[in-house]
Amino acid sequence: MNTKRFLKTALGAMMLTVFLAPLVQAQDYRREGRGSLREIKKSFTVGAQGTLEMREVNGDITVTAGAGTTVEILESLRIEVYTEEEAKRVMQACEDSYSQTGNRISVDGTMRPRRSVESRFSITVPATFTLDLSTQGGDISVDRVKGNTTLRTSGGDIMLLSTGGIVNAKTSGGDVVVRDAEGTVDAKTSGGDLELERIKGRLDATTSGGNITLRSADKEVNLRTSGGDIEILEVAGNVIASTSGGDVQVENTSGSVDVSTAGGDLVLRDIKGELEAATSGGDIRAERLHAASRLKTSGGDIVVRALMASLEAATSGGNVEVEMTLTDFKKPHGIALSSSGGDIELVIPDKLPAKIFAEIYLESKWGWGERYDISSDFALKIERGEGERRSAQYIRGEGDINGGGDPITLRTSAGNIAIRKGR
Image 1 (cartoon, rainbow, N blue to C red):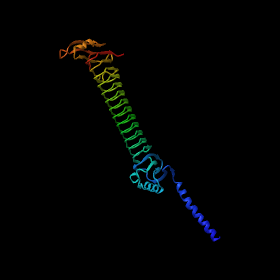
Image 2 (cartoon, one colour):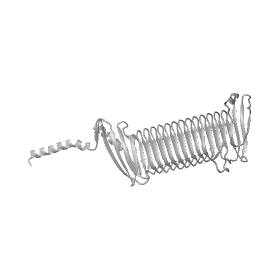
Image 3 (cartoon, rainbow, N blue to C red):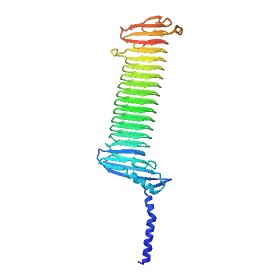
Image 4 (tube, one colour):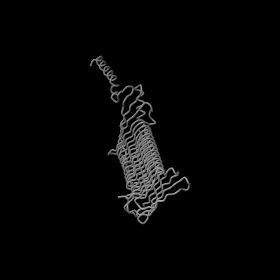
């Protein structure tokens, strides 16, 4: 070959290589405005038991259970820098944040630039892996991972599906959803709702600014919210629930129930264990209470249907209506109803053995003009007289029915009392 032609050909090839080099590198990422989109792919061989730890990363995390014994991580990054040299340094820092020690895989977000990179992690782990994940500003989703799970996010939602171990989930600015959890669950959010379903272990859930919905739990339940409603359906264990600013609804529970609200109504149905319920600013409506119950409101009515146990109910500013449908009179069935500003109506079985005491107490004689009275389908001795002070008056009705039995006490300060026979 001619020497000049050889040199010319070689020089051309070198120039072509230099020209194509940045194009080959550019295939590894895609520019988008000032930033660039890139990927990191990692595969780690581990055992069936191990831990994935992600510490203070920035972005969304999605974890699913795989069939093998590897941890597969696909990280999609958006890097916001001005030059390619800066992008390379960011990529290297992200690469260096990955490490493996035995069956422990770590991604250390503190080793990464904070402001210039945002990631989206798609991860597959063995089904029995332990997860310890924290993100500064994204959502976390976990599906079918049966090991213990600890999740923390400062600004996103958390979703867990089909978990197996102990669950601790906390977010400062989003919702938490947990479905089909076999172990205990501790869930907290400062600014969102809690949606919980089919929880087999003990449940502790708190939110400072949202609603709580629970559908099906097998063990003890403790729920608290400062600014929303609570809905509880089908719980086999004991229930404690409180809200400072909403309504509470509880249905179909087997254990004891203790619920309270400072600013809403209470709706209670099919409660088989003992019940404590209180509200400072709403009504109480209950149906099918099977065990001893205590109800109290400072500003509303109390209505109870299908009562099958003893009951204490008091209101400072409303009416009380109770219907007892108990058929086994050997069960305790004492009733104490009181109102400071309303009527009382009680319906009891025709054959119920009880000792009745009913009283309307009026602090001033002007009350007689309202024609308050005691009416009863059962024979009672009615008495009218003066109270302890001359300005006070009272009407009282007393008597044993069906041979006497558990006490029934009815008191109101400004209303009527009616006692009726049930069907």
